[in-house]
Amino acid sequence: MSLSVVTFTERGKYLALDLGGTNFRVLVVKIRTGMRNSVRMYNKIYAIPLEIMQGTGEELFDHIVQCISDFLDYMGMKNTRLPLGFTFSFPCNQTGIDKGDLVSWTKGFKATDCEGYDVVDLLREAIKRRNEFDLDIVAIVNDTVGTMMTCAYEDPKCQIGLIAGTGSNVCYMEEMNNIEFVEGDEGQMCVNTEWGGFGENDNTEDIRTRYDREVDGGSLNPGKQRFEKMTSGMYLGEIVRQILIDLTKRGLLFRGRITERLKTKGIFETKFLSQIESDRLALLQVRSILQSLGLDSTCDDSIIVKEVCGAVSRRAAQLCGAGMAAVVDKIRENRGLDHLEITVGVDGTLYKLHPHFSTILKDTVRELAPNCKVDFILSEDGSGKGAALITAVMLTLGFFKG
Image 1: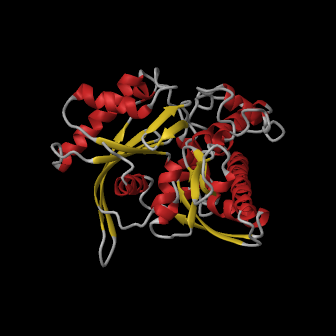
Image 2: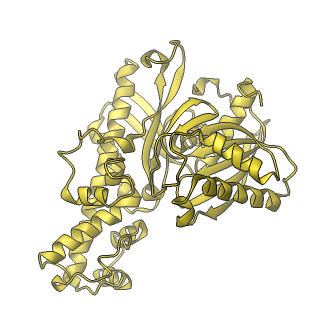
């Protein structure tokens, strides 16, 4: 879809779903136009238990529909048939605006009988099973696309979407004459790179470490999403843990004792890395954080742990920055420009909350793409607003017949 067809004069009420991690968000988005355009949102966040994430596909989509039902009750809208935009943040083979076959689960999901199936159909079937309400599912979009559209509503120069959180991915607007498998040379098309899968053909082996291989081998999808496992918040803490275990085995940390706690997968969440790397934290406070995780540390241990966390997050930011630099410089080349000015819409807890990640990423882009002026703007509303905007555009243009 080209941004050139988006007039932002669309209006109405739309339901949006946002599935991409351990939480699931349901929103009602009200778009108003006139003297002052406005978008108002009402939302609730629902947890997705691990047993649902890794159970059957039917259980997962029944849980999603149960959350939708609760939200519609909460909003008093159970009897209103709304158009729906579905943000689905997993690799899909998208054959239409409302058709997307799941290629593979990522980010800890492993629900059975979903891969290879159209997730929109799976959602429609779950709605029929519940038989409490009906919805018109107009569009399925990736979270990068939703984020880009959310930010483009505020800044028309926004033509790239970046997710740097639990997962890692980028989308961008490409000139149609550069896309071989689609007819037509006019306008632009949104390309979802799914760059988290970069490296699955072994072309990142020279920059992967044994710690990366340990994390990959212990994941739910070994050999898949290798770049994401080096750059996303879901995996950085596990890389840190593997390094700390190695240093402890060598007698350099924790008096050489590998405790049961250190053996526990998942103890280093992204929030702990962000806290440990904060410039405002003294070593005694870092030590206190480690002790709260069940790791009895000295001040020297705290220095080493802080250095390890910094090295892992810095590499992640630089890799994301290198990828972004490649994307913007290729856009510049494809458009035949000496200099490109472009805006990136960003969402994700790693970018938002980590004390240094965003700065290192921007510095890397600036260094590797000197002929591009790249501005980054945060999506304060996530990708749900963008999904609703895309749904509104599809209805306005008559692409959805119901």
